[in-house]
Length: 232
Image (cartoon, rainbow, N blue to C red):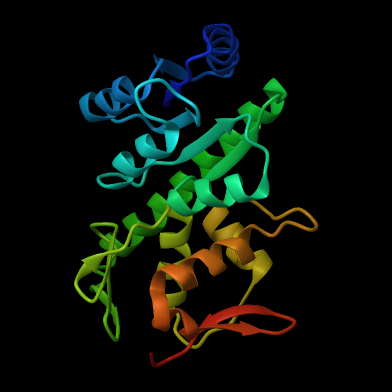
């Protein structure tokens, strides 16, 4: 049974979320503030975190930064901050998805399920690579170790979300091959994209930014999708 860590200081809302997630078949632990959330993750890593932005102690962004130093587990930001700038900040720091308050319980459960499916799909990809003895992948100063789920650029670790790592891994394994947005969404997110969904484009933009000059190697193939050039 998957374990979800809920980090939420509003106790009434926390009780509602816990009830809905438990009814959907998840085990739930609760942390009411930033420091206890970090301790919770250190003591027993959950399968997914539902993380509020505004928290006592330190905020959800700081929790996310600390979690991302050691783990790529999926994180769903749950917050009243609805501005696009806020969503972008959360995603760039390392959130995998973003749900704005007020929200419906069915949507919350659906997003948790989708994130866990995505996580499982990417883990299966990594397990398959390990089974096939896939070597460490290189592209100029970029080194990707699938078995360790680690990417380094010029020797420095890259802080990538699980979806960003999945996209990079898939493109790097298939240099020169063009993939449609639909294929990338299905392969990395673990589910078909809905019409108008920009998840792939947004993730590619973030990935290019994190890769710096090397990000230019992720080429847009007009009318198709994306490919990684054969040379940096």
